[in-house]
Length: 619
Image 1: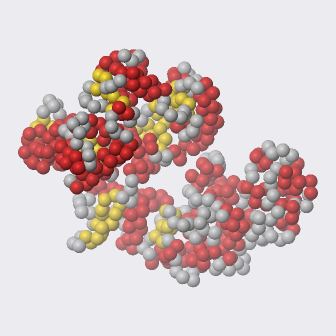
Image 2: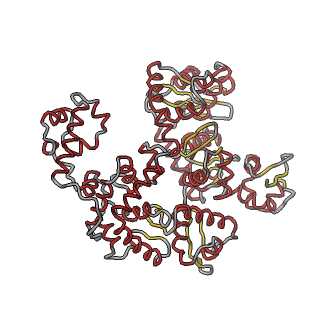
Image 3: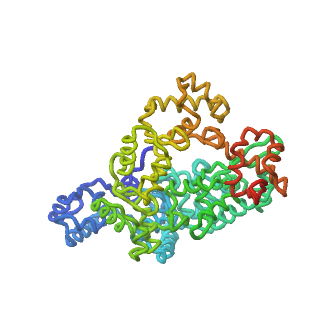
């Protein structure tokens, strides 16, 4: 198990100070020490990590106490000679000399530049790019170039000699390793290898080189690439373009020529393919290294699309760009990935962006979100952000950002469409009310009649609950009842789901309902009341299966509907004038068993159209 980094140890190795020292041993002012102890500040680390604004809010600590403590600390530390001189003359960069270099560079910087340097190098935290670090550290965008220039000037002034030696070694290693190196690729006994061994984090010397000479190096993860950040982006763009134009199977050698890459940068190309584009490299017996399927998850692919765009994108734009670059994806699956993954932020109706680009806006609205959550809990009522937006109390952008923040509040629950209510234990009041009405009916009731007896304003919600909530069950197409009235407790339901999963596994991952009957009968589910409709309803509400029209059940990961559509589209592309359903089945007899669901799947496929409902053709 990886041990989490000790921030105190990392900072101590860079500054040379023992941060565990009692504050009284460093600050000679007894009154200030007593005031700080009463405020919970015992050690030097406690004093340094506590922001000034927070410290001044504690009882007994005022501006004068804070100023006296700072003055005493500065006098004591400088007086004992623990602050190193700011010169790189005579430092041996092998080993501990690298740590001394970093101390001197940090001492030469102001507060903002020092915090930026620590964030970029990954000192005491996860390494970030300068742009991302500026957002987290709340450094204004206009100040970022100044801070970055100050860091590079300090490196040139106080560490130019050792860094020049690092650059020479890195360029030799990059030439040997074809354009990209990691910590394990560094030569044993080299200055870079020794500096990586002595540094608080092994990749820190490589990150320092990328920060000092951004036109020659860039960091991608824990690897140093022998191109600039802009050069790496252009290379990724060229490789991605070549992947879409070259015929399959794509050889890595052909891709290298199409991207115009020097053969001496072969490892850099493999790095881009495997680590940036998440493409698998397969060794083919005839073609050599070839491109395999992408291994990146759907959220990762969406993140790549949004990173390549300067602003937010609509759902349709994301859908078509994903099809162009990675292949087809269902709209519902794309929407689910956007809503469930924490990297994305909805800025408007079906308008999505990366959350990292809007951290400053979210932080500004966080107090308002906490106030709204407290208001909802105190009033014990439903609140609609859309109504407040229509009334002019909120702008559209603020309403969507507040909705995102409120979804992460534990005290409230999102109801959809911008509405929130207090989070309660147990079933919601409406679900309990429906269940009580069904209990009074003492049996299954007609679905349409039950809806007619509901108030007009909530019929749509009641219909949704009756069809999806696990408290209810649909014995037939037009009937609804409580699940507690049927012999399906938790143990029986689990047995039913396991039996269906075993039956599907024996039949290649999918089967018609009729094929499941023998396995279910062996498990004790041979009662006459368990109709096909009731069985499919139980599997839809309680299981994780893919259900298709015509009574087909498939394991979720098989992708049965996707295979059917892909096979049908392949035939339709060969017939420009289109085919009827019968002609399509005649072309591919293996689709005959899915005749009951094929027409429905084609009608809902955005890549297939039908002018008369009889003949289908690919758009």
